[in-house]
Length: 167
Image (cartoon, rainbow, N blue to C red; front, side, top):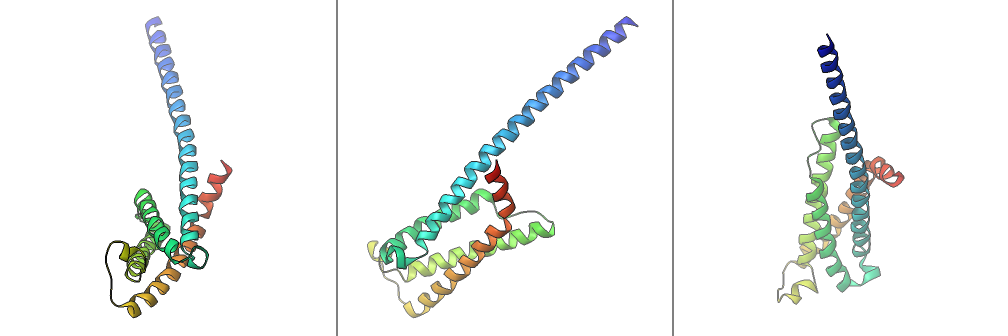
């Protein structure tokens, strides 16, 4: 009987140690999640700031608009790659997937049309593109669509943004 009690006590002690280790792992993961959320929020804020400046050629001038737009396009593409497009099979997940996919396609359309009407970037590489009267209106529409989709993206993710700011 004493052996069973000792064995039972050893099992209880091992379970306590294991649950303590799990608690430390969970606390560590939560702490890592908070740091990761802060890092993501800072990175997303920088991407948004660069896009906001690049999206307004009246403020920056056309030359800076074109070069900053290339940088913000790369940053937005990196954001999409880091976060992924797929958000699950629930209605909300599918809606987010569609929103993210539309934003990525619109970003690509805006970038391609912007490069095609470029007066600074293409000549810097010794290139020239015909079809200004096709690409310029397309670029204007794509830029407005991208802005609307990015605003919708921010509204949908507002709860996460608020949680990350509170941490």
